[in-house]
Length: 246
Image (cartoon, rainbow, N blue to C red; front, side):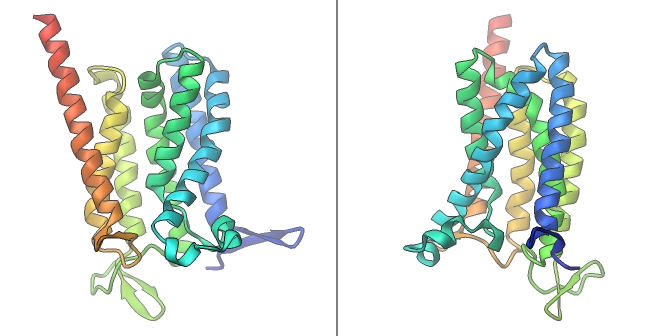
């Protein structure tokens, strides 16, 4: 499949970008609908996203460049040329969450509540965006004999994009189901971090293009940290609420 969907004014518009944009649009619509149920204004969601979405793209690129610095060092054009690939989800989440926090603080809006509103949209956007990797023939795993393997450069490999996308769609459903059962604001976002990170840790082990640091896969290190930190926060907050009740 041609990675370029069509040309506009001589510029190739890639399927990867279309899929990411579609995920952002759908996620925004879902977040707006969810925000109304908890009394957060639609304009606050849109205003926040105007800052958070660009920040997530910058964060995703900065993260990728940082862990590939030997390749990008001294070449500013390479650093900013995202059309050649190089966006990391973890960096995007960090960048977007940081700006969302600053926005909420400036508007006196509960960040944990806002994070819970956006959590299902985040994982849905990731599920959709992963199919861009399939079209680009990237972010795949090593060789496999499994019947659902895909052919890349004449070799049958693990479709790791598919594993992650299917998991993310499932997490999207779980988060929507758990939303009315959560014990405190922010718990849904923490569950998003935990559930996504569990799958990412194992799937990353199959991939052939992992970012590395000190001989270890960066995504696996981040995933372990996210799982532990989120679990500790959930435990401590629940324990505090329980102690307050008794």
